[in-house]
Length: 206
Length: 201
Image (cartoon, each protein chain N blue to C red):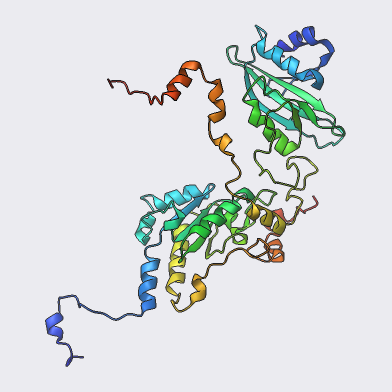
């Protein structure tokens, strides 16, 4: 069992649910959805924990529809070579929504979009929660949910018609294909060099 | 003939004129300089690349130059599964190709959807673009693709210049589809090892 679980219990008390060792030897810990952001920030920033790297975000729906849906976060502390799986349970009868961790890890952006696209779980505070794998006008639902029929909800002819009606150039906005938005976050000297149109030099160039 | 042409004089030289049907001549030229437009989406594209490389070398059949622009291509080779998200893309590529043009559907997925009888996959590219030759296999070996190319040669050599219908463009119908909807539903029916899966399942 990963010692981070005991540290979590000492800090957050009842917000930490059961914990178990998965079959591959890694520790899974269930936390309360209400305090997820807080707990993730603590895991990332506390010295001795240092889970700086978010490997993946995914979700699980069990075959038993009474069981809650789980959102799973794979965390890794690169310098300690430690892994931790944090799970949040969501009641399938209630609204499927959980706090976004994108403010903590930028890499969570597209991972949470994928979970939203395929499971229909919303992430509160996500900057751009849109479909990512299915096209944006996809109207059949969320394909990885258990109540989703394998072949989709529409007839094949209707699926082909909707697919052909799509604009093949609309899937990626210009913003997605450029780094224009990231410009404001570049360090000042890099901005200045870009502004001057500096192209860089090869070694040996004078 | 002996009285018209002195065979002794032209023996050992090539004749400087010959007769042929225009159809034969044009079809011979078309069949032997097919520029492929590769539309590789999956593992079939690996076999396609093997077919293009030195061991199998489809340059032997006049396909030396792969046209990575539809504007300069003669034959669209769809090598791999086609998800619905790519359906408008292959349709646009096909529409951009100038006549004369042909389509080879390479492999089980391109031809029928293959094992991917699911919500994301086109069940046969012929629901999106017309297909001339289907190459079965998962994926087909390079010999299989070459055999398909030779079948296409055969087909081209039987075409007639007078048959204008062959070169007509067929844009999508008013319904936004290439085929009538019930035909698409019929060719998309489950088959093979997926017969136990139903739309409601």
